[in-house]
Amino acid sequence: MRSAAFTDLIGPDGVSIVEQPTPEPKRGEATVTVDACSVNHHDLWILEGDSAMVDADDLPFVSGLDVAGTVDAVGEDVAGVEPGDRVVLCPNETCGTCRHCREGPENLCENFALFHGGLAETARVRADRLVTLPDNVGAVEAAALPTAYMTAFHMLRRVDASPGDLVFVPGVTGGVGVASVQLADALGAHSVGTSASRAKLDRVESLGLDHAVESTDPDVIRDAIEDVGSVDGVLNHLGGEYTQLGLDVLRRGGRMAVCGRTAGGTSEIDIPHLFLGHKRIVGSTMGTQGDLRRLVDLVADGTLTPAVDTTYSLDETNGAFAAMQNRESVGKLVVTP
Image (cartoon, rainbow, N blue to C red; front, side, top):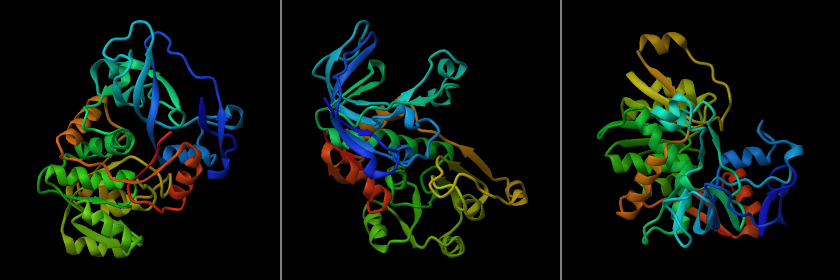
């Protein structure tokens, strides 16, 4: 089979199309013919050499978390899916034995990890992580869901977002940002988001963004949000200086969920501002397989249409990463092997 493997950790130029043996399913596994696989910053960080989990000794490395396609074969002791089923993969990898796996939620697993291997014509996966797709949910739509939309869905719960709440999403034009806006809108919450690009903000406004702030300057953003109103929840996938900004605009008793570090892996915050305002900062990683099932249902009933910016062939995978690196897109970038 062909795969878009990382053969050098230097950014998009490090992607090569290579021939690899087609995998066979082992006990509890399935092989999936990949119809679509979206790309994420998680993949890009690996490709840029900015991930502790992959180094030169692991090359060639096939990344790709968000797989949608058709079951080709199943191994022994597999129930729930069979060859011919259209499916999307929940990329969570959990131990199944720790307290959090037993009691939930699964994304608190003490040994939590993520699947890799979707940027190929065939992927070998845990069969019990597959969610079947209704006929009216396409593979490209489904592949957009797992990382970005599961993450946003879980973050909205972590901040206890309710109808009528105001949610702040810094960096609103990426995958998680757009997903946050769409899901907040479906919930009945209002959103305010930021970007340096007016054209990108226009696009996200068409997807449900209520208040757009064209800036990356925390002082300008802070003033603009104060004109909008008091923020009930912050969905922070940027980190860096945006963590203090999120605290600044939160109402008393408000909550911020942090899921990423695109703007920086460390943040300085005003501690008195935190405790005197009874504000809360919580971490959030991905979501659960149950979340993914609910998202598939939302797509199937027409409540949610995942925002896909561009699709790429397997041969064009490096172009997908170049577009992500250059911040050219609004929504998801999806490879269709």
